[in-house]
Image (tube, rainbow, N blue to C red; front, side, top):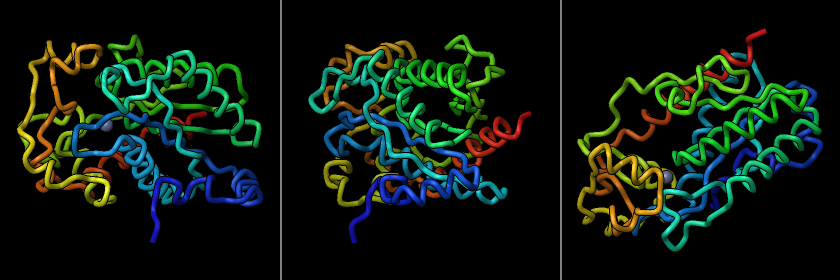
Length: 272
Ligand SMILES: [Zn+2]
């Protein structure tokens, strides 16, 4: 059986099905990622596959509250700033990504959808700025409510207070889902485990098992996130402990993310 990130998205529907979602006043989830290198053991599509998996779980949670939800086509031409020096990291300009996202949101609004949420699985600083700018523009210019569920812990670094019309503050993770003491910043144990659980054929398990943990102190993590020095900080292009992937509670992690994000979306969506 062929699986993939189009499962249960608009890509696999005909237009009359999408019309019926509009008629039922469905909320839209837009999976957002990038195509970028994820170490020598994971495929370039790791972030967008992950964003799609998160959307499937978030959809279930929101639908349990009686709302209809539909997943938009996965959007994967985001900004690869931190890993931009590697082969496989496609470098889309920030303004291109913002313009493209706004066009997608405008299309969805044109179809008749009234509430749209961007589910992003790529943590680049520039990528977050792209989402913030695009959702701000869409919520100001279009007759829709457009929201970006965003970690409330990092919001202040972006000059956000959390009461902006286009932001849905997400609570920090309170459960521990990984046995690794080395955080998964990029292509570490959690990302590797998530891909291995859902797409085992896309993970080079033998390679993942022999990769030594790579960690950086806080200053150098910021250097990584700002980009441009990734190769000197991590020659193999990962930051974390891929080999510890078999001790990650994948489904518990996805369930916890879906719980916190759906709570943030519902709080935003039901606000009058
Ligand atoms: Zn990633």
